[in-house]
Image (cartoon, rainbow, N blue to C red; front, side, top):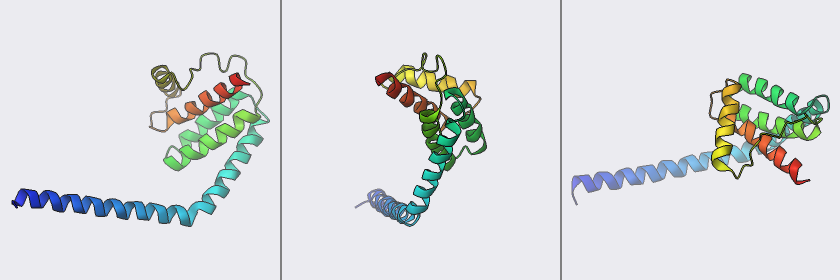
Length: 145
């Protein structure tokens, strides 16, 4: 066996071991923090619902974008999505709110619309499109009822 082959095999084994350790650490973290995460999620959704009862659909999006600016990391993005989902369900209708919102299955149009919304709000991180994906989900559910 040549040195190159041995190096490739050793590298592959190291990558597999590191991957297993990373997965194990992730499972451990999730199992030890799941109760905390669920409680925080319930609280965030309750806050979204409460806020939604006092505003319209657009007010929910405005508040979510403002919150996302303050907490743009992954944990903040998850919280803002939960908040927005609950807020939109509880909020008053905004006339024309869903008129220009594409279906999620219109992949290219959907991605373009999300990018346009993020640019309009001057949000440039990778989690921003998820905010507007929640708007799409809301509009699709509303149209199906």
